[in-house]
Image 1 (cartoon, one colour):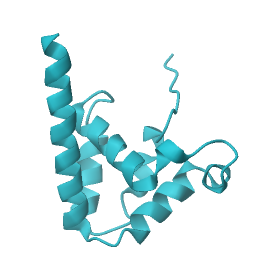
Image 2 (cartoon, one colour):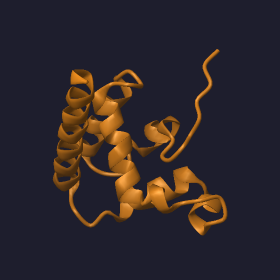
Image 3 (cartoon, one colour):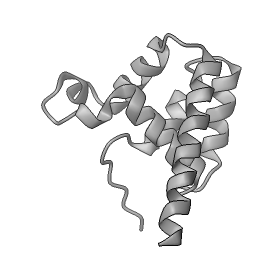
Image 4 (cartoon, helix red, strand yellow):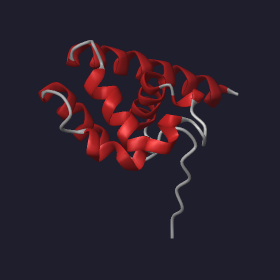
Amino acid sequence: MSIEIDVLFPPRIIPQLKDLRGDAWRDLVTDILQQAPAAPQRLAFVMLMIRLGGCHNCHADTYRAMRGCLACATQTIKRHRGGDQELLRQFVETQSEIERYLIKIEVK
C-alpha cells in the first residue's frame, strides 16, 4: 500500500492538465506521466507547477486552497500568458536546476 501526501502541488492531478493547451503541452504532460514518481523530469514538472501557481503561498484557509488544487492548477495553465514554447522553456530550465541539485547532493 502506498500513501501519497500532498505538500504543495499534488502530482495526482497531472493527468487532468494534459488537454488544457496545445500539442507541445500535451506531449510534455504525456511524457511526464510515463516517468517514475521520483524521476528528475517529474520533479521538475511539479516544481514548475508550484512556481507557476504560487503553491508555496497557499494554505488551508486561502481562497485557492478552498477551491482545490485541480481548479487552481487548471486556471494557472489556462491563464498562462506565454505560449506552450514558453512553458516548455521554463520546464527545461527547472529540469536543469533539479538535475544540478541532484548531482550536488550525490557528491556529498
